[in-house]
Length: 112
Length: 110
Image (cartoon, rainbow over all chains, first blue to last red; front, side, top):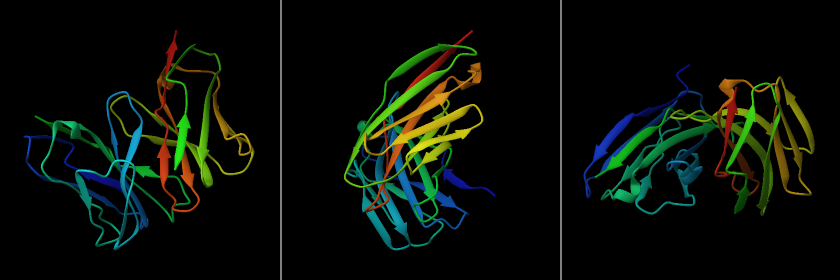
């Protein structure tokens, strides 16, 4: 099993550009999460989804958007990138929200 | 929401035992997780507690007291490869959000 797959692994964006971070999982998990992790810090929840067609804001949603059209995919959209969005982004999934969350390998984003 | 606190750093000697404490405040508790994260890597699952008591998994054990809003992760027979960040995470009962503490960096010295 591939588990949770994130693309790209690394990206450099210029201020004001937009991009989509891709996340897909093949475990048929209905719960999916997006976190950001700044250097030396813990994980902060950006958005999460409890199933296709349903998304909710986490602690730090400003500047981001998500969609969940299928069970497998949960892309994160950055509009008008800002230096404050320089971070490592992790996508995770879990079964019914009751099992442990499995994480992708992360996307390292730098906004310059 | 949740408020999760854990120490920032801990140092221990190879072969020793280290205990990482985690306290939390939540409007609806539905489970506590411990994750290990090596530098530059993704978090990996270590243990899960939803009822009070001790869960043992080899060299790692985790304890939960729901009435005190308290958990600890015990690492025994420390090895150099245990040098990592250890993240405490709490799941909310009402919306199943999974919220993380800032993590505790453990350094194991020879």
